[in-house]
Image (tube, rainbow, N blue to C red; front, side, top):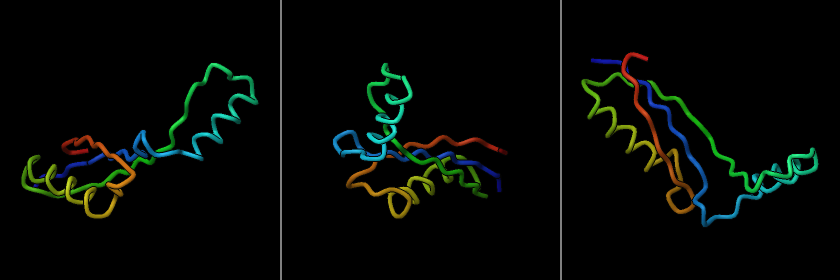
Length: 85
C-alpha cells in the first residue's frame, strides 16, 4: 500500500449564482479594490488514502466526489494527487 494525498477543490458552476462571492466582491470594492471584477467562493479538502497505486487512488477520490463531497447539479470539482504526502 502507498499513501496518497488528494487535494480536492469544489466550486459552484459558473451558471450558478454565488451570493457569498458577490458579498465579498462588494466588500472588496468598499475597501478600495475596484479592479475586482468577480469573486467565486469554493472549498478545498485534503484526503489521505492508503491504496495500492495512483490509479486506484484516483478512482476512489473520483467516486468520493461524485457520491458525497460535491453536488453535481450545482458544483464542479477537480483534484490533485500526491504520493507520500
